[in-house]
Amino acid sequence: MRILITNDDGINAPGLEVLLAIATEIAGPGGEVWTVAPAFEQSGVGHCISYSRPMMIAKMAERRFAAEGSPADCVLAGMFDVLQGAKPDLVLSGVNRGNNSAENVLYSGTIGGAMEAALHGVPAIAMSQFMGPKTDDLASPFEASAAHGVAVVRALLDRGIWTKDDYRVFYNVNFPPMPSKDVKGMKVAAQGFRRDTAFGVEPQHSPSGRKFLWIKGGPQQTPTLPGTDAAVNLEGWISITPMRADLTAHDLLSDLGARLA
Image 1 (cartoon, helix red, strand yellow):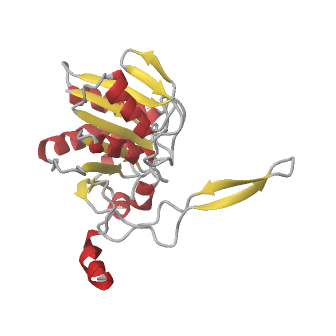
Image 2 (image 1 turned 30 degrees about the horizontal axis):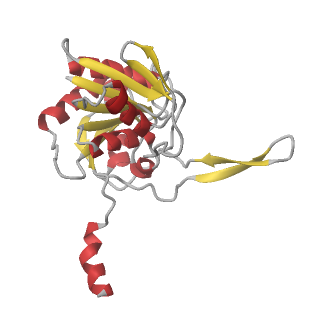
């Protein structure tokens, strides 16, 4: 099996090393794992591509490349330059430092990398490690994803639903914020929504008097509705959410058509 891995935390991120270990075990002795990851952190870029400027790509080691672009850029670079058009059998994106549950999905470069692969018909899984008070004192905050990542990927490859429609399904996996021994198992969960918390801005002034704005996130330990991703993560479950890039509100099409007829 040929696996392409990427992330949004950057080529030197510890979560990428966890993902490399997962991918290496999945690929097996006769397989190949290729890394194409951002040269610098690209958190929060979503499904952005560098459409208006070129990006530099550099070989760091055998089958390991850094690109000055987003995770979606890295997937494109991996498939069409590094692998010279030979599509991988699987794309893994992550392991992100921090959850990509609930509304975080919409901002996530980790999700963007998996989504780009799915748009090219390649099976893809985004993987993120929820952080919290119970991970603060661990030797590695990625303990849960390192211990359970291989089992999750194998379960999805063996028993997951992989569609062949235009907007193919990809998977969003979030590991709970706790030691690996406390993880209860896997749960399929819908994307949730954290109420009463959202991204905002925090202004600061430089010594020269210029005003700068920091993007500021809301509390991450806020549960979503019961049974949805962040809620089950906080209960100790690995959430698995099937996703598509199609943003159409299909449930409204018929009613809206009748109203506007």
